Image (cartoon, one colour):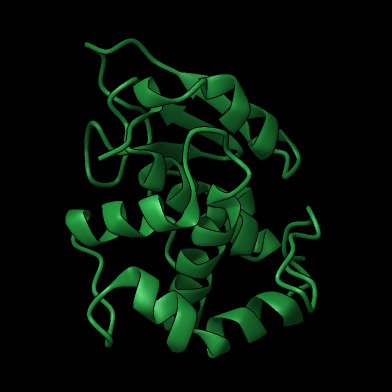
Amino acid sequence: MKTLADINPQHLAQLLIKFGINLCPVSAEDNIPGSYWGAPEAGIIGNQLYVRPDTPIHSALHESCHYICMDESRRSTLHTDTGGDYDEENAVCFLQIVLARYIEGTDPNALCTDMDEWGYTFRLGSANKWFVEDAEDAFNWLQAAKILDSTKQPTWKIRH
């Protein structure tokens, strides 16, 4: 599983700041503030994304994508539990796969493999197969929210 230690974290920080998210590294031996699942999984409090060197990239992207996809009222009180409904969760998974291509040292296929290894479950049996063959509803949600454009490229905006 690819972790922050496997990439230059500055590349992730540069991606996330486009959405107003600050990457907040913590030391390898510390707990991760705002981590719903516990270390080494990423934590989020407001627009602060907390990670350690052993935090999986998919986890950092997943929590970040919740921030991007949630409405303003939830975002204003965000602490640890991102909440959201089924449609938002699918949109989050889709968006994290899209954003993987913008981080040097990873790509959508590698991210999908890590998502499968972690235990994400999709009707078609794998994250990649879902993304390619069965995620039109998630893409439509992201496009309606103006997070992705019609060519599946990020608009670099958060949901309002």
